[in-house]
Image 1 (cartoon, protein in one colour):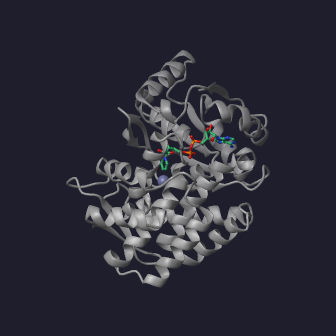
Image 2 (cartoon, helix red, strand yellow):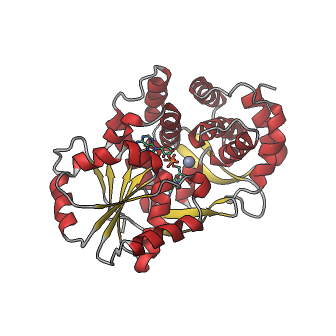
Image 3 (cartoon, protein in one colour):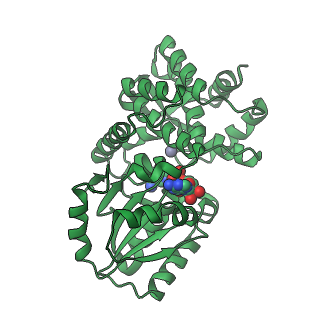
Length: 354
Ligand SMILES: NC(=O)c1ccc[n+]([C@@H]2O[C@H](COP(=O)([O-])OP(=O)(O)OC[C@H]3O[C@@H](n4cnc5c(N)ncnc54)[C@H](O)[C@@H]3O)[C@@H](O)[C@H]2O)c1
Ligand SMILES: [Zn+2]
């Protein structure tokens, strides 16, 4: 069963009624936040759900670095200490780190208790909170332990984005741009134009809804990532490797920024290996790099690291990098095995102009 996604445009939305009815059936409602969402999002939550009793459990230590099994133990201990029972509901109020970690804890606490996700980052709204995947990192490898666990609802309220730092906006936007490239080219162009004009908030709700529709449609056809869901990994094979290397070199890139650069490289490879028209490929790359320029100081010295990091990608099969490429805009193809030398050349040429 795929979970319903609800959108809130204002606190007076009809959804309120729905949630109030739900809320009554629970013995307790427990809201969990990280440090930033305690500070920036909890008051908005209180204002939205006036007169509702809830227990707040802050998780100030929860960050990507601590997205580990240790945090699950910590959450379980706090839930037990607060005597949260099986008929309670948990609300994860935060970005992808909170929804992934708290979601995983909710899926195992007393063998699973009801979960509501309220993403507070753009990336959370259009990506992390959708699709029922929860999890934590293990031994430094991302999302190695987790579960498929659907929340009762995902509640999307762009009001939370008012305090989101620019870097996080750019990160979320890159995933939306990816949705455009794999499913709706006109949407890609709209997003790039908005970003280039510095107007990320124009038609924001419309764009969030479009991205949710695209991701949900893909998930519905392939819930356990046996095939079609893989197209959501477009830009991620090269992107993840870049993210790792940028972090190691002391100039970290946001996930989305790295994915945007990854999409540029994978679009370049699409000409030879998926039949994408050269002119189209050039145009996509130019537009991507216009809004996500290669950061100063990043050059070919990073290519070796990127190639090495790609070898450890969990999306590989049989040790070879496996990429999603574009046959045409909106027409991705999966599982493309590309010789390493070609990937290396595409990185150097596309990102570093050599
Ligand atoms: N489950 C999935 O299918 C899925 C998909 C994509 C990503 N993810 C996971 O999501 C995580 C990334 O999520 P993210 O990009 O949302 O990062 P994040 O959760 O780390 O949030 C980014 C930063 O913004 C802060 N923040 C959150 N909301 C805020 C707000 N409204 N105002 C001010 N600050 C706010 C957070 O505290 C954090 O410092 C990764 O761990 C990734 O693995 C999961
Ligand atoms: Zn991503």
